[in-house]
Length: 316
Image (cartoon, rainbow, N blue to C red; front, side, top):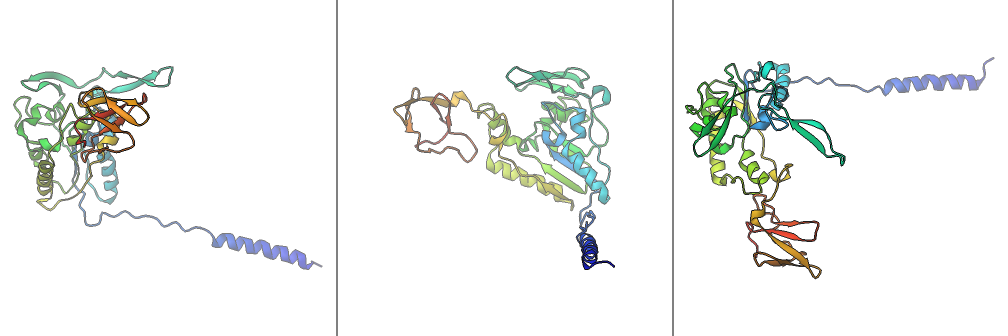
């Protein structure tokens, strides 16, 4: 005769199985949708980030992994069209050349070396009052990725720009210095249904990475006007799109400060810092406009207990 305890164990066992079955998670499959957008011809507008520039150069592997290419692959799942990029050929896969990791120093810092084989360089040209421009193998096929490394929003409507930027020049039918097609006219030449735009960060990036000495910021009013011209042009025929905001360029690796704009102040008697040049003194426990609205660093502390004051800032 079976005991009550045996029946109880069986009851609990089957009750546990029912509990596990009841706790089985439900996974709802995601069905992508294009909504009201039309991705049949998507184009991307921007600079180096859009083109796939990486490791200090533009080359085939970087182009293949550009963010617009990744976006376009997702668009295919909802009826998106082909996305063609101006790729360098496999024989010239290293494009402009780039930096590769060659090893490490004893202190752990990386050793880099330039890649100089299988390049797409075809020539160089000296432009009066500008300098040398590297010219690359021409690309003449279909194109959906209009990313041009180095371009600024400021150069949107500047017709001769195709003679000053080799990455743009390779996409144009003419040869430098005969080009007279603005970037805006170039991207509008063929109809499109959807766009992404990430143009504008170079208008501040060069200024930040050179410490305010090697470039100038695009005037805010000029920037706003040109951005309006660009968006109005892209949406004029009903195309939809997305725009990316401009990041804080002072957070970009490589941002620096120009010594030509700085006075050195030496620590003296606790918190008092006396400038050896320029005649400015201040207490370090006060903040005198540590950053301007344009991101310029105004007070920089160094390890030797000295401060550097940027004379471009409005100290008072």
